[in-house]
Amino acid sequence: MTKKPDILILSPWYDVAMAELDEHFTVHKLWEAKDPAALLASLRDTCVGIADSKVCDAATMDALPNVKVIAHHGVGYDGVDVAAATARGIKVSNTPDVLSDEVADFAIALTMATCRRIPQADRYVREGRWEREGDMTFTHRVWGRKIGILGLGRIGIEIAQRCAAFKMDIAYHTRTRKDVPYKHYASLVDMARDVDILIAIVPGGDSTKHIVNREVLDALGPNGTLINVARGSVVDEDALIAALKDGRLGAAGLDVFADEPRVPQALKDMTENVVLQPHQASATHDTRLAMGRLVMENLLLGIAGKPLVTPVN
Ligand code: A2R
Image (tube, rainbow, N blue to C red; front, side):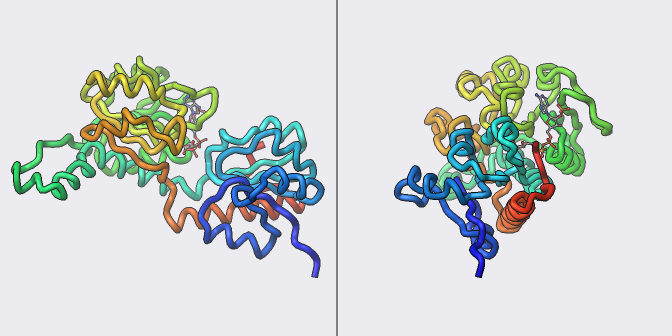
């Protein structure tokens, strides 16, 4: 029996999907290695594919010079040094589309949870406050309100369609106007000033770093709600904490953070107007299986020297 090609997984994802890789590859898992450097050295000549769910840097590529493909698990590939891969002739893929509906569902769920204060209400019941103190204070409506979507790509458009079902007044900010029936803002600050809820769903990386800054948060204002399902880097987290503390921003629902899985204590302490989630927008069994299978397809194609299903370079 011929040996299956060696691949290295740098960081894990859904175990059911990862297990399917064993049928085609000899799978090595860096995070399980007692001595990661020794594992890399042992794979130097034979490893032909890398898969990751977070970061893949140039040093790793240099340690494995026969790698033909880096299959990234996730649509946002800001953790992969694509320029370094391209310079080395390595193909890179991501997992777009298969997660768009899931992330859009979650964006709406987080918007609902934050505006209708669902986690806070759950605690209110559990802590016996309903019995002791009577009805909880009122929350804010979601349907019919003005929503601004920062980024109107594959996921953003799905969010917009869901917002339309909630009879919301939909606007978006992107660098280029899209052929959609929603109002385009060339300025993010102007859009933030006009909307009640701002949902961020742009890619991470340099071009969007801290695009949601103090000015944007102030424009969103004390009655405004920020929902971030994009990347932690998109929002200036210090400015966000300050705006929430000062009451210059009303509320925030956050699935992503600057330094995951570490979340600033200041955000954890804000229990009344902040909803925190552990970066789980795409994390259902169904979607994570689909994402894992797309990683596998890209690995198989890349190692065979064929075009990838979802290339990024
Ligand atoms: O700016 P445009 O016209 O290229 O529109 C894209 C927009 N976008 C930006 N908008 C404003 N300022 C920027 N610097 C900027 N850079 C990109 O984000 C486009 O409408 C959207 C990205 O769409 P897709 O590439 O289709 O990404 P997808 O699949 O919707 O995922 C978005 C991100 C992922 O990269 C993950 O970081 C996160 O959602 O889960």
